[in-house]
Length: 509
Image (cartoon, rainbow, N blue to C red):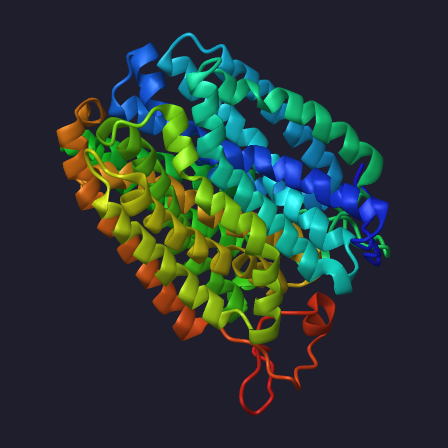
């Protein structure tokens, strides 16, 4: 039975309940974020222990991102209908069970399958974590809560390589996955006891939302066809990119089929009365623009962490722990300055942070080209990571807050799901495509010379995508004027979407 919609978010961040809500959402999202990055540093050891080639290692990363990206919209819809806390807790438990299976996997095939199951759990808990913040906190505290969530979530992603390296060099790579079990045992009970339940109304556009108080609308079926087509399109395109170096007819047909499934997904979403991804949400130009920036940013981030974790170990000769420790400057910067970045964006608007942040990150990635055999940490690695961290600090919190502020609160789960799907799909395609673009062979990660050459070809691709994201942000992201009286501006309190009105005041929606 659907949970009743929450009428007035009233949790204050300074109260004990507010701190519990923030802790729960950070713990849950950090598990998913950690597993997006922590595995990268373990890849060489996984490949050696399970006798896996580069394609198997790509699938170890991509199987997780595939199901996460393909089902995350459905996860947001389930939360909006049945209760965000309920679906969040189910996702946490599912994620822990799949992590246990990853930790005991006897072969690369079993590990890839378990990673796919892990992504299903991530698809349930990831949109719920951010939607719970949006639906629970008082509007006056929402911006700071999102900033703290973004900062600590970014720290979870950034600290992943360090944690992974410590575990790989210590108890072994399997503990990279087993660590999620105690985290889940801590997170789930706190959520049940301290986080208020909330759900969106179907009238607001969240798929399958709760019946309104008037009871005039019942639940409609979930968009299963849309979910299947979306996941199928991502799977086929990913397979085609990973196998493209073989140049076979099967690969070409798979690519065509993936594109056709993507077109069919858009067609189905346009025709259904209650689609999984209502296309009218993109009527907000701010929402559309920020999701384009998200695609660019997270494609580059995923490619960067995938290549850098291998470069430091295979070419520079770092241990797994050494490679993870090398990434700590980005973690420290995120910890110190993420909340301040959110406050700055509140004062000056999102356009400048979303333009400057990607450019800084691109500069950091180009500086990483100095990292090769016998690279010195202080003169070669550290400057690149400091610039990269400064860009992440500038970018992450404003990006997240601007996405949520671009839509009505009843669509919080949907907006979070779409933005997360965009981020994961971008990372999925990047990890699949970069080895192809960089000319990386199946055994390249076993040869320092081959991998170093591929790294030098691949990193400029990542930087270029970030520059594209900066251009998109500068050209399209705007801040509403001080005279904006739209309800969503009063609801969300800061960094809101520009009113969808013509210059003559006629609504375009």
